[in-house]
Image (cartoon, rainbow, N blue to C red; front, side, top):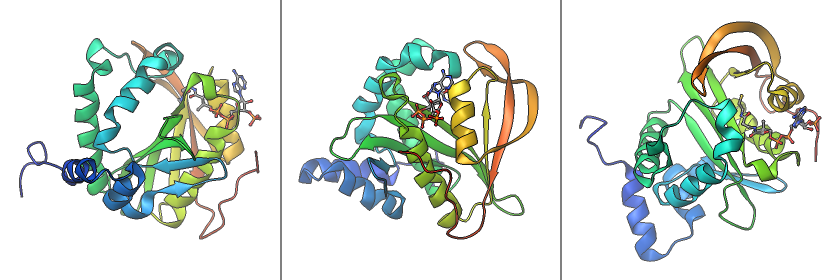
Length: 224
Ligand SMILES: CC(C)(COP(=O)(O)OP(=O)(O)OC[C@H]1O[C@@H](n2cnc3c(N)ncnc32)[C@H](O)[C@@H]1OP(=O)(O)O)[C@@H](O)C(=O)NCCC(=O)NCCS
């Protein structure tokens, strides 16, 4: 088997084919990731593909200041197509290896990127757990979009992927994340000092988890 860093992921081949045949991106994502595409009342969730690089870069640039307090410090290369493409390649490899799941959050009727969510560090065996990360465009906050998107994504993670625990951690002053996670049913499990290096400094985080309630039963408080 080729070394992962030198192997060309399937997504590249699909991307070139989809481009030549002028296939809609959703079909292409479906061909690549099949059952991972999700639909909610107002949104579509699909894994990102290589052809999303321009719209993902546009999302990063438009939300640079909005996301800065909550994310690792980014250097200039983070805001280039080369970096986005390399990260999308890595996502493809990680999803093939079943070590993470990533979704773009989009409106039903366009390819605009409203936000993203990811379930990373998937560990099987006796743990069956992963970490959740998410972000929404600054202009789209407060409409319940992330709650709606994560309700569907978490149901998939429990019911299709059969994971048992989703862990999500937030800075104590991130009230929007705190409220969102509470409403999704996450429970506080601890407090970790200097947990992540965010925006250039080691920052404390509140540790929370959501445990699978059992097949077909994940239904957090309804919100429209
Ligand atoms: C956290 C985030 C994804 C929330 O997205 P959203 O679609 O606005 O979330 P929802 O509308 O589904 O729910 C957010 C809840 O927090 C509340 N909220 C939003 N901003 C708030 C604030 N500054 N203070 C207190 N509550 C706030 C909302 O009213 C809502 O509560 P409700 O369900 O009781 O109405 C978005 O704010 C974001 O991307 N923030 C920056 C990135 C980030 O923090 N990522 C997570 C790192 S752990």
